[in-house]
Amino acid sequence: MVLPVYVYGSGVLKKEAAPVTKDCPGLAQLIADMWDTLNNAGGVGLAAPQVGHNIRLAIIDATAFKNEYPAADGFKRVFINPEVVERSEEESRFNEGCLSIPGIHEDVMRPKRVRVRYFDEHFHAHDEWLEGVPARIAQHEYDHLEGILFTERLAPIRRKIIAGKLRHIARGKSGADYKTKIM
Ligand code: NI
Image 1 (cartoon, rainbow, N blue to C red):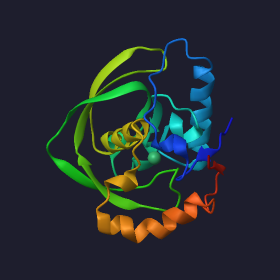
Image 2 (cartoon, rainbow, N blue to C red):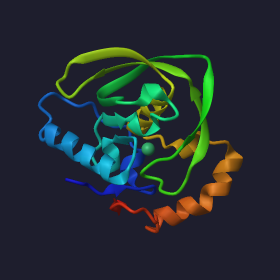
Image 3 (cartoon, protein in one colour):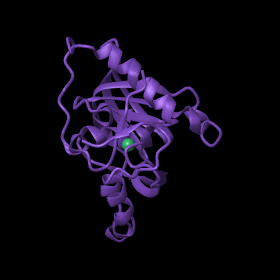
Image 4 (cartoon, rainbow, N blue to C red):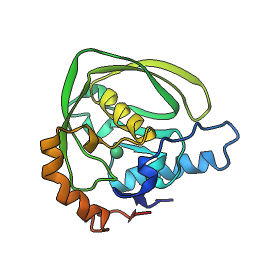
């Protein structure tokens, strides 16, 4: 089932999310609904707070970037309680967007490679180094679980330039072609 995406201005996007427990009610259904929501909106990543659930869960599908970055082809992950345990010193610039901030795309600097530890949907533990687009998306989604939006990582001058657009979104005029919500 496609869920509405909470957009900029919603309190849930600014909170630190709570750890997921194994007996978390409705977890499998929520993950299935998040995949439906991500595919419907044509996104590459979605964190549970973006659909109103303040828990440490995010999904990634980097396939849309497979032409530019072959390693992104088939890169799909469910991250439960992820942790970024190492970051490369080397950074890269990438034009990011966010389903919760429709219509805004800005370059963001982030570490090029990250080592992440997480549990998948079967609660199997994983520990892997990511690089390129998967590393980028993983860091963006991890930020969501910390209550951080990519616009907060922009230089003050860029934030100033997009401030009007953000206010627009917060007033419910997102212009997104998928279902959105503010709360
Ligand atoms: Ni996002």
